[in-house]
Image (cartoon, rainbow, N blue to C red; front, side):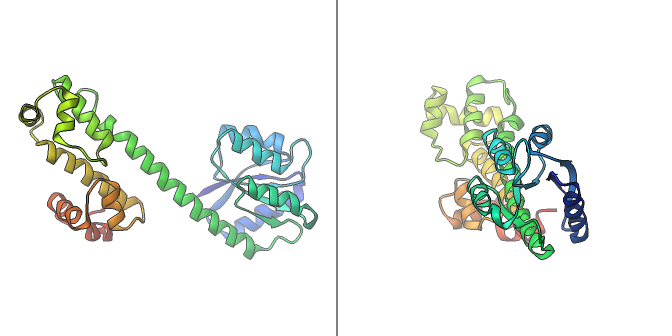
Length: 257
């Protein structure tokens, strides 16, 4: 369920909007209420809701001022503004500051609200995917650990590959990083990890590709390019070698369970 903070100075209006949300049953539930922007801001700071539905005209701090404050503090939540016809200029300002939309307060149309919530759900799904991708990128070095082997220079190479697996990684570059001759690095890396440098990079790229195939709607071609494969055919070949499946088969569910 998506959490909603309802910010409206009229108690009757809050009760009506809450009732409409419950009837729509679109996966959005009112988790908190506030009668002004000043009252809402600390609630948003404490536990950022997925969506803030805020009246534009309120005492102490109006809806546009609340939206501006939240954006300036970098808090990630969506806004829908409630407006009267005479508030249209304020509504336009709110959209400029990143509000997802606005609704007419005096004649709240459930169909319009449903359409707005569907749009916001799409935005939130996109946000959630980006957050997962960011967590995945940050987790790769952590998963490898600070000391994956007992050799500090090999560990340096491993960490570099984990952070830059999507880039072009040559044996010569890795050798320069480790201050070793390329042939010596290859032999030592295999001895310390049980894997060749090429296979180690392939494994990182295939694991990343599998994540993108599960969690995004990027095309197979875009996934391959994003994780560092030079062309589609090579990506498909290496992915199948490691997983037993083509990227398309993996995405269809054969490898996602």
